[in-house]
Image 1 (cartoon, one colour):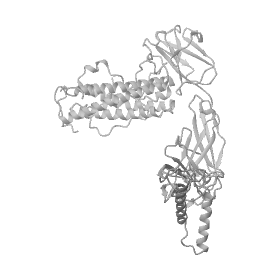
Image 2 (cartoon, rainbow over the protein chains, first blue to last red; image 1 turned 180 degrees about the vertical axis):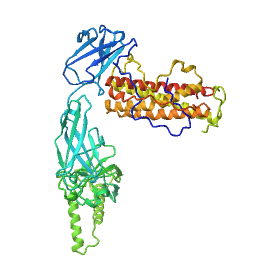
Image 3 (cartoon, rainbow over the protein chains, first blue to last red; image 1 turned 135 degrees about the vertical axis):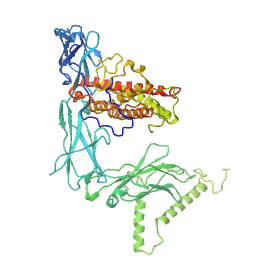
Image 4 (cartoon, rainbow over the protein chains, first blue to last red; image 1 turned 135 degrees about the horizontal axis):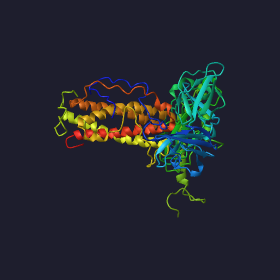
Length: 421
Length: 200
């Protein structure tokens, strides 16, 4: 019957539970005097073993009346009865077991080795831990979000399969002074990762390593040395807007804002744009948009919906010479190019890769020329807008010219429209 | 709910009609017990899975070791008056949280990468406490709460689960999870008997 812990229902404050658990367990294996029941003890209790090793175990029966016999006892391992030839009776009350070439433990809580009486009842149990010591973790990589924190991840040695619970601990310290610190927030970006949220120094290198420990041993990774400023990443650029360019059916204008957390440090930042047609999975990437916060995509298909994303690399922050780490891509922004009767080209980019002939370098040079003209010549009305208007006019003229000439085959037909005679 | 509301003579049986607020409270507590019984089933399944065979096998029959401070509902339980049964239910629910917490601590060592099991054990302790308090509130409203002094818990059961081997600890945890389920099911049945026309 339950212990008489009763009280009025309106009792407001319950007494806190005792510090020690209220368990008085009749431990499996402890003999009960006068009960008429047999129990047993398995030795060794809860051993830890290397894969491929052997185990010698015994099951010693106690009981009342005394002189309990080992005859009829048998073993199971993880619920499966072990062949009788692996067992032998050592004496009247002890059954021995010999297991060779052990496999790795089936579960982390240990393999269940159980000694049974003849009738199948459980007399005693012991849990086996069979596995491997950890191998050296490797491939540590770290990044800092906006110079405020540090997240690291690593690869466990031997792909992590030790068959035993293996504890990984990320340690770090300032290179030339300071004590070892242990990271506390694990599994933030996967099973082998850790996040250090605060109290990190800039302009001074850290040493970072990972220690792996299990019941069979420990291993330590190589030390990674880094300066927080060399591994900075940031948020994706916010407020990405994609809009049409007036009169141009093969272009879209992309504008964005510098990530606000680092906006005062991003004068050397690089941006990258990628875009794809709505029903395609293939992205085209525009590299090296440098530190502008706008770009024009050219050579697009008219009348087509495009998805566009932008990301930022805070290169050169506080004078760092390292490559920097790209942010995540911004949320996709969609826009469509105006419709056109003229079949459009396959697609292009505002800064296409390779040596394709394109308007990219031309536009850049033209922009520089216009800027120079404004300073040094009286050409206040000159602007890119005028250039685009000229381009739109050129496209329309080209279309009209094609309509006039397009009905002519390789021979001449003259300027009359309508069916050929 | 105050004690005066819906108060009945201690010997009243469930055929006496209940005042609406009391009936609502009983229904609510009964529904809670029903929900938690399902939860206890899931806890038990997850527990046996993580201990490994033979724990999950239908043929597994470990010794039903006594756990101090708590035992299974006795066969005579069903024959007791309903308020007496509810007192026993409340006492069992009060004894369960420290046992579940001890199991959780041990499982944190044995199965550290089983956060769901550990969370379920933690939740189970909290839920047992909540249901126990709800049952005691029903008893008080029925005027059937035990007004005697609280019995002291059994003395000096020092960290047996920590000291014993892993296999006995697994068996103990199974026993505690089983008792949790049994007492929840028992509480659900006993509360159901209070409801006019049976459970909703």
